[in-house]
Length: 78
Image (cartoon, rainbow, N blue to C red; front, side, top):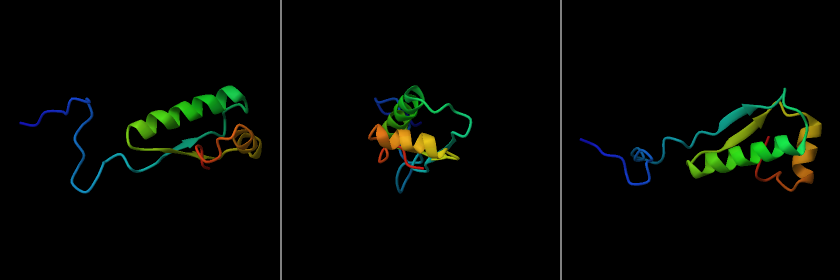
């Protein structure tokens, strides 16, 4: 019988974590605002803590400009 490690996370599969595939997030309908960028950055943080990551899909030029202006271009890649 297998038990979960104390962290509550499932044990990694042989060869690495099963969570390494980035999650594509369609942001085409999200408003361009600092609140949106904040939520996306928090989502990225949660994904990275779980061993994964997110990538932005269908982001407008305005949203990408705001992400860059906020200094998060390396954190939230398109």
